[in-house]
Length: 361
Image 1: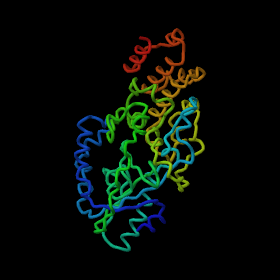
Image 2 (image 1 turned 135 degrees about the vertical axis):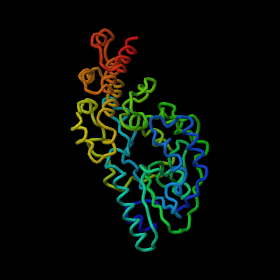
Image 3 (image 1 turned 90 degrees about the vertical axis):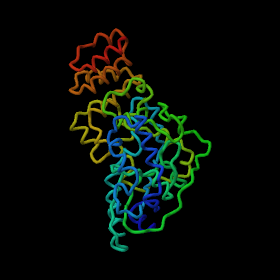
Image 4 (image 1 turned 90 degrees about the horizontal axis):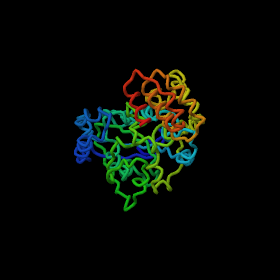
């Protein structure tokens, strides 16, 4: 299995049983009860299916977990110093991993069914599978204090996928937690999104705010976002286990040159068609142009570069209230108060008017 998995492009594989994580349901229920899922309502409505692999597919007898290494070729945090450029999370700079992994899971699953029989189903993280705790039970790594999977061989940089099968396969040993007393991932979080080790409040997480959150970015988190316009790698990049990680070998996941350090000014000018073209076949595309430009405007507001005010001013007239509101905030950070106040105009959207009022208070 391991040799075939590597032939299909995976870097690590392990097997576990569908009932290997009995504590997963209680953890998820606490996450939901705390409201920590934010706008991700689909998490609250799929608790029962997420509780265990058997709840998703009762016929499953074994779960094969696979990991694909995407360790970056450069320091993912260096971009944070280039304030007029947009910082995009490592995982999103190349082709959409969902499509790549799913096709390879299907290839491996067909090989398994042809050679060993049984029925198979494949899942990437868009399905109701709690991949990280299941992967830990399969021996791929352990869930670190930042709640992401950590591997001895690949640090924090693993994409996960799973094959459910009706075959009874021998299970691998679960991984031990090797975080020890380290708090690097917790202490570096710009928005203090971890109320305690091993717990995440998504409502405070920059990855959630820039990708999943539907409305305006809460004011309390805007300055902390810096130039992070899609995702955040801080907690992943600061994990000491990354020193053992080797660079990813999948060329399709490597950063596109256009996404390594894109200029905020250029990104702010994207209309919907241009957005779709630039981010074709990437994970960023599903966020949509309006939410993405909202993030870009937060980056512009944090840039300290007054020359970018022209880009924000132009977007005061954008069709999207979400964009207009973010433009108000960006201008309030870049322009002298009198000049900013002179731009005020009554908006058809209440939220945008509230942005003006808050900025001028």
